[in-house]
Length: 315
Image (cartoon, rainbow, N blue to C red; front, top):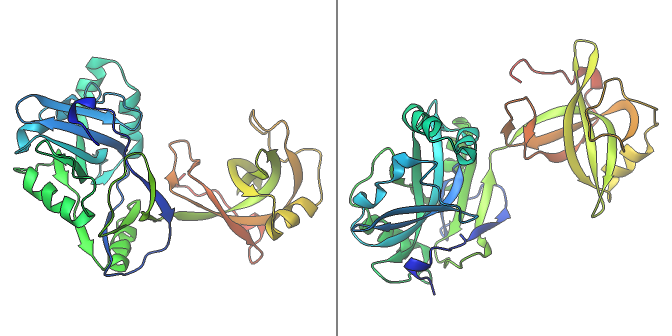
């Protein structure tokens, strides 16, 4: 039973990944690239915003302190806290803000790159826990509770049935992806549910397999490289399970004493191999230093020479 004053809600989490699909049993919405937060809003008493770790976020985003003025009834909302740059959510900006404590810098950034809160669910309406209502009914309450939307505080738009077309739009706009949610899904606090499916728009790129490091849980961390002119340079890691053909082929590749580059700290236990294999890695986006965010090993490819794995200028 959800109580407004407890203010310790753990959001329900997405429990499945998949490819885009159409279905009359689902509604679809964009997957926003920000920080998941729960908002406790009381029209008379004010706004409280907390992240998944239950940290109070208003000191980090003071520009959202008056969200309660936009609602009709006391409510608890689930949504994404974001900062937009060039018309798209910028994950690093909101991450940077989350770690800040300097009030002067926060105030400056709140004017330069103001945060916004996009709501996709409602758990509590007018002193009533509504988590056991089907999602489509909760969405109706969400429409009802908001008096008006602004650039700072708005409701996530949904599309029934047509997931493929929304995914194509997300892909064209280079957004994070979409989420498919069963229309009849209930909200169970803190649970990871397969009723919500994450469909990510991932980038992919080819890398030279330079070596590997044994990890726990039958995994290895593959050391990746790319060529900058004729020089092989270090480009990070991606994880792979030790079962299967990919690992067998990597492990059977001839070993060498050291790689062609000076590896950074953390690679002391690496097994180095001749740079003869190419693999494709999927990932969310480039980090500010040219690395990959959330890399996933896609597979080895044999139609490309290692010398053709070239550092891109955009990194």
